[in-house]
Length: 88
Image (tube, rainbow, N blue to C red; front, side, top):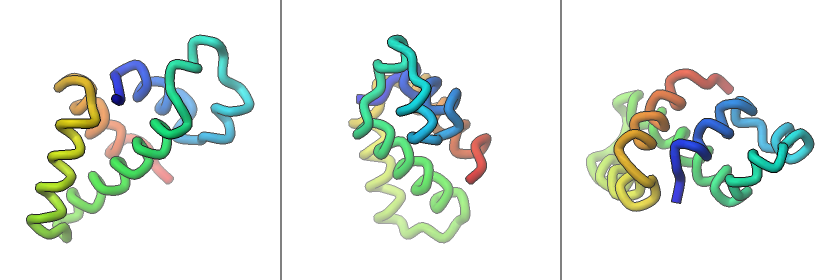
């Protein structure tokens, strides 16, 4: 489950999994590689949703994934903000 802490680590490395793998400290180990990929996918899907081109079923599925895969409302809000702040 994604937490606010894991999202902050992701942001600190600007979503760069290779940089995280090379430079992480012991405190940065609270996020797993699989979590990293989930965050990447959710950010992509949030950007699709924000574009206005997502189908209603896509939006419902995204909302369900956000509700079940993210620890709390603060972490969900942070992920939405990350999707707007980070550039690829």
